Image (cartoon, rainbow, N blue to C red; front, side, top):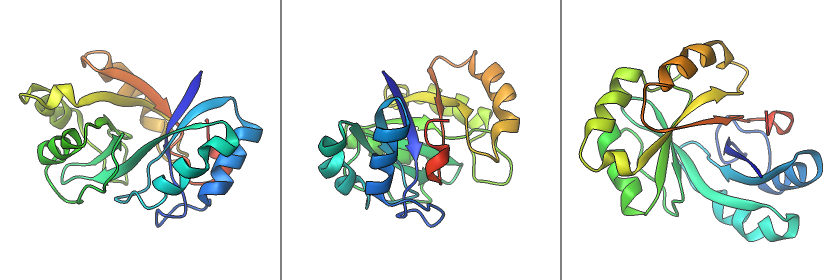
Length: 177
């Protein structure tokens, strides 16, 4: 099946969609089987999404887009929020304490707090971090970030972690892009 692991709801300051609206849209308008609600620095919409997911036949991965000191990081399979502003390594360790995994969100994107490749390389050399930091968003469907996708995709080939593509949707029509 297909997954989109980077979707924002109204629980993000820049999200426009209710959780129920997201699930309804995904069920009716996409071929996605799995989604992650990854609001900025919160898990407020996650529990609602997980409670409603069965109604729509969709699997929901609990998550958050965490603002680390070095850039944004998708934290997946977490139940509690991770405090923003911490170092990347401290954030990764806190995600691991919740048995979660993480993915670099929109690396190298201009105009936002994005991880740069030297920081990613350094984190992957940290003992234990490479068991939690498992992916890089080598394709981001967000309207602002698509310019950097070719560069990220090329650089991601040299990184020993999974490459993923996500929508970074803030509006319904962007989900699954």
